[in-house]
Amino acid sequence: MVSVNLNGEPSNLVGALPKDGQSVPDFNLVLPDMKTVSLDTFAGKNIVLCSIPSIDTPVCAKETKIFNEKVGHRLDSVILVVSKDLPFALKRYCAAEGVRNVVTGSAYRDATFAKDYGVELADGPLEGLCARAVFLIDKKGVLQYHELVSDIGHQPDYDKVIEELDKI
Image (tube, rainbow, N blue to C red; front, top):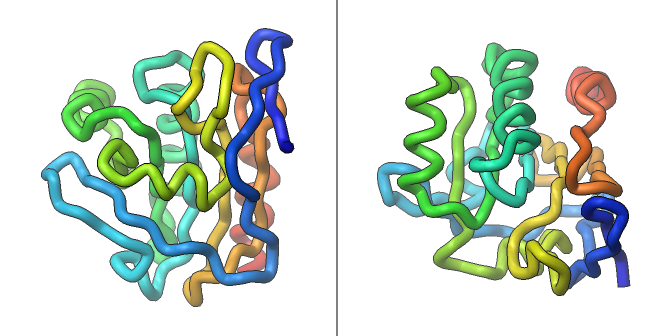
């Protein structure tokens, strides 16, 4: 079983991470306007899919802002930040922080996202939430790169994500 750390304590994950070079599983996420989207919604775009525990934590908020600033201007790509936060919290955060170049999706209604992407925390203080990970999915729905952040309290490697995005 794969695990990540939170404050030095391991938390196990449910499911298996998708493999680079393979098609990613579909998902159903709820947007802040309460509409449901799936992988097909973003057809023709590269997807920087960021799995986070909660937008209401400083690390997750910072990650969302950084991806908004560093990647949000790209017309060929969409940044999709996914958590189990309610859509109302995601909408509130983006409005309050001026985050306009990120799509936020809530996995609260359909728990299969976290299991299918191998990021559901099986135990520990954040049990049931999503671990911090980044999945770079190309326009054909194939995973080109992924990073499971080993400590939930740390940021992903933004430079590496951008370097890999530039390759596709």
